[in-house]
Length: 236
Image (cartoon, rainbow, N blue to C red):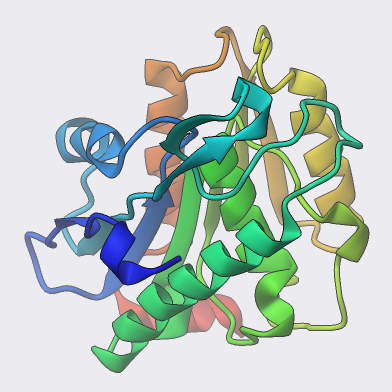
């Protein structure tokens, strides 16, 4: 993902001392500012810095080759569809750069969390549980809203860093783009090696609800508390 072709991430600075960072990836055809406004108005945690990256525009096979913001190409809608492994790897390298920058700025890896919506959630899950083969630092919590697993045949890999990571899966029961069954499959596959995963269904289609946002906020505050000492104690 060449830096020259990607708009810079949207940044929401912490309103108090910066002790944690959350990187959240938008879905297909969206941009970072959409979710930035949601977090700013409804899900702000004062000690967290929020980063909302923007995917580059690319042809998407599923949408007849139309160009739109996408983290990787989507080749099909079934659980067993072929996947754009090269595009996924390029996106992974880009996000690893964002994470490493936060670490260089003094944020503990255990205080850096990732999440996303739809294909952004799929990217977050991939980074946490599969790309850990190349990024073996234990990170914070993970948020998957209307997400699904990519490259699931590689789960869980041979790394140990993120096998106790708190995972929140929120999914619309009437989702017609990423069916609720994908959320159930994601839960089942992750639960095989990480029992610290929760799946909550919501009465919506491919979107979110006020209750899902409230539950997500509670999950963030619980998983990444304000005090560093509390977080460290939770890891022991």
